[in-house]
Image (cartoon, rainbow, N blue to C red; front, side, top):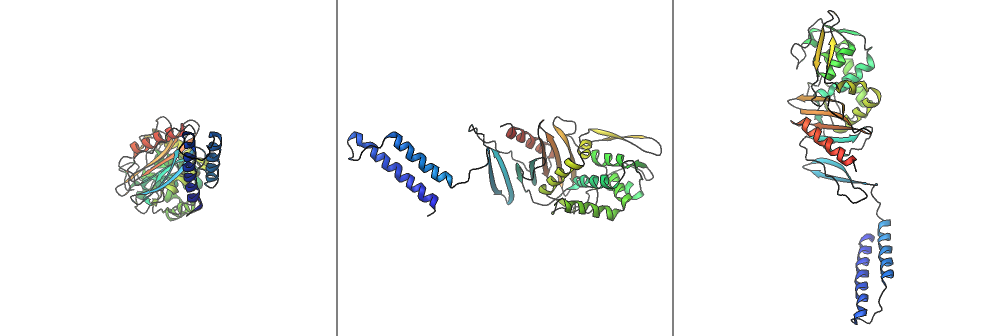
Length: 329
């Protein structure tokens, strides 16, 4: 029997003896009565010995680890000092979920945190990182036939159109334009660009992430909620412009040959809403719906990730509402 169990048994025997002692006043035993002060002291001493051997949880937080339907689940629940009941997380149907304070490597809540999943156009976050690292924003790129015919876009760009790197990044992030992602990669050298994306992922410790194209079309473009959290943390500290752009409800780019202005509408329905700082949408038939979002409550920023859900915007908003309640304790 463990020392903890022996102590618990001892405590139970102690309480029984004290109860028997207490009956002396009614003439039921011949044992002397133990005073209330002595009883309280003994109980306090017993609890003190037990508590000394059990490491206390972090202040106001407890870590619960469970497995549900073979999906790893990590959860931090708030336990306020005043004893207010913890707020349980909502039911989310995404294949993978993560909610973290931006800059932290430990999630407040996650399911399927390390499960790989096709990320679709979340790929473009890394495409933007490499483009910002490798290109002068004012550099002009001519759209090729290949880029103009990129899968997923119909008539967005035409072969021969000329745009600055800055405008291509805007179109790619705000409108998720595949033509723009392909044009950026081709201008650098397609295979070398992909290698640069993979190298950056490796440098960031995104060990479960693979890239097969710069757009996110291939099912081989895969990652995990954990790896994407690492990418979000990196972008927030080194390429904040990416989140600034993705917070826009729309943008305008200029074709350099004719000066024609072209509006690009945001694919993200959360763009322009209160608290939304930025993020990226992703969808393919294999990935279903993906969404990486950054929110601010005024003093802190949080990254919310949902992968593999047909209701990515609603589930993201539900998770953000839960996060705000937890943080309000």
